[in-house]
Length: 105
Image (cartoon, rainbow, N blue to C red):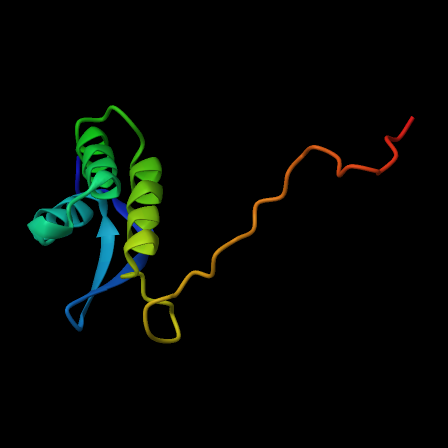
């Protein structure tokens, strides 16, 4: 059941070659071809998620979300209109009130 299509294909670019990934098995195949020297924690998470989906332990949708995260983090995700998307760093805001601010009553 690892060939279940996910709907909209995800486009990734590796070494100048753009591929469309539209199933968990295609994502797993892509990950098997990922350069060994670039295999880290995010890679292992994506591979484990794809393997779990193929074994029907998690949903295909959840596995593709993890693979999409992998593609974003590694900079290989291709936007519909062009080159790989570059993520800008996000600022994390504290949930604690700033000093000097009044607490609502």
